[in-house]
Amino acid sequence: MIPDTELKKLHDLIIKADNPLYLFDDDPDGLCSFLIFWRATKKGKGIALKGKPTKDTIMKNLQRTNDLLVILDKPVLEDEALDEVGIPIVYLDHHPINHITKENFYYFNPKFQDSEDELSTAYWAYKAMKTDLWLSAVGTISDWHIPDYINEIQTQFPDIFTNIDNPGEAIFNSPFGRLSKTFLFSLKGSSDITKQCIKILTRIESPYEILNQTTPQGKYIYKHYEKMNVKYEKAIEEASKHIDGEQFLIYIYHSTEDSFTSIISNELVYRNPNRIIIIARMKGEKVSISMRSWKLNLPPIVKKSLEGIQGSGGGHLHACGAVINANDLDIFINNFKKHALEELNKK
Image 1 (cartoon, rainbow, N blue to C red):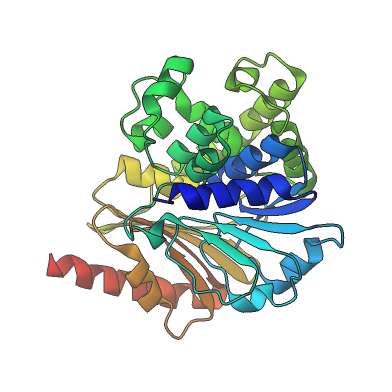
Image 2 (image 1 turned 180 degrees about the vertical axis):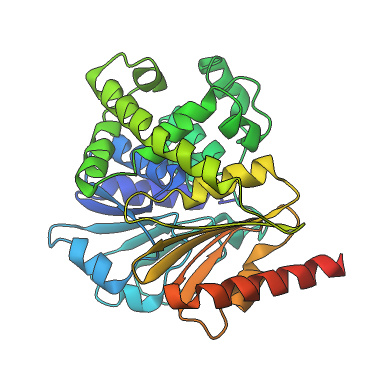
């Protein structure tokens, strides 16, 4: 957990900032965290980031008028990325702790108190700001956690958050799944479209605006969801065919357009709970990889698999990601399968 005193400090830092820059992970948890903070103050700008924040990325987006940098839900953050940042930095995350020595750096992570606490960034954003409970629920459940306020949100929106007691069921087999995907797919498409979607979402007051298309803003988000969902359904159908032996499901695809690696891996591990899922998206000289398994502690396996390979990776107990050079993909997959099978044989 994050203590109330720390949540109060986080709240005050956000409230006092006149022009914060938000850099958040490009998934519903990161997006909803940003929306909660932005809507509490109506100040600043938010940018969805793929991959870890680098010095170049941060300095490219940081403006002289920014007085606070807020980094949300990014599992990997390094000292050198922050070297040239001359304003206070807030880092709210729920992944394994990064060791940062930067001054004027405010780090909020439930793992400081409990190494097994993985409650989402959107959960803690709500706990700090006490606004937009429904946005917190979207981000938290989409990140595979059932929040302790589930009964309250079910009372407010019984037809959306109905009978939710398992995140996988909620995302892939309930009315909530459609809402979750509208947020995820708002981060897919051209940069101009995603920027427009993010801006529109800051103005949305209720999930019904989107699902029932009751406002022009909600209709825009929903129409974009429908367009992206056609692409996603084709991708998940193809990925489901790639069974690899008794233990694995491995799908490698080439795409210069939209990445669905994370949600494909989530749906496949939901539908194949006894398999180890590896989804790799090739784009140019880089590969983005999502790995899922209910049977394994993935971060140590990913770390071992990256030895001798240029790239980065990490994540949660049963869900990890990595970015590597395309030339190293076969090596990484062979390493991963070897170390995964070694761990399975110990059980």
